[in-house]
View 1 (cartoon, protein in one colour):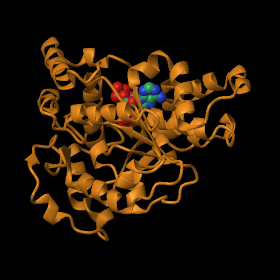
View 2 (view 1 turned 90 degrees about the vertical axis):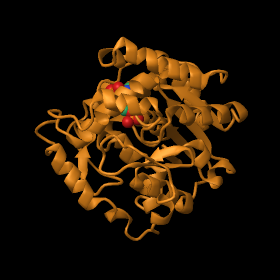
View 3 (view 1 turned 30 degrees about the vertical axis):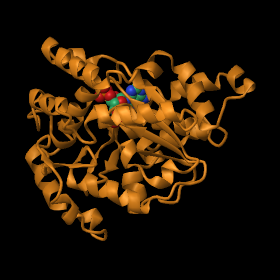
Length: 337
Ligand code: A3P
């Protein structure tokens, strides 16, 4: 990371100069933003703003509002929804491989030369900005909370797959992500303790995590035919069961012959952390920023890929505090970690 990333303050300066450039042609949301509650961001160049119960930087807020106005779902779209750092790229790789398995074989697969986030675009970024707007496959993704999703999605035949993760691991992954994106590992953009305090108050991009989880959880209980709720840990522990379940739900079930030919196992192996993180494109490739006009290393999406790495970062008191928050916020919902 150190050799690839400029000094943190230089990236912050670059961001300050370049924020907004991708959105110049879009309506000005200044009027909306000035009416919203302001929260301290994770030492990012701008504050967070609370819009419809969730926290965003101004650029993300624009992206979310723009998505509402511009995104048109395809018939039979499968929409992958995640709380950030919950394994979005893994879910994208799995769903993309399932959906396209009769079109590509593993020797010439798009995921060999493009990161998962390029193979499956985001509604609030590429789609809302008109980049790669024409999609070959009915598969897209978003971090947008359920209550802010477009009416056109809710009332359509689209299927929604939601994935979340133990918030302790999601938090640690977020903290690394922010520091890898903006810093050089010598000097964190924000200390772990400070970021943790904000996360516990619900202040994180697309936070509070508990409302993000609960909205999709409740919707999945009300409409199980339309919304599949998954946890990172469950897929890690029993990938075979969940990959089959995902394929069934998406409408691309594995045939008996495919099962006999180890198609499920092959997809799991192809999308594994070990395989994806060792591909050159994910080791040394670059991604264009979606809210910032800059490039960043694809490898920041592949860190450890483990359950329970929080144990190496959070003190016992911190873990207990977050566990209590999780228990209190999710109490009575049936959702547990
Ligand atoms: P860690 O930081 O804990 O390693 P997202 O894609 O939503 O940004 O989530 C990133 C997290 O998913 C990172 O977690 C990353 O390492 C992990 N991840 C990426 N690819 C994975 C894979 N194929 N299997 C399991 N975890 C993966």
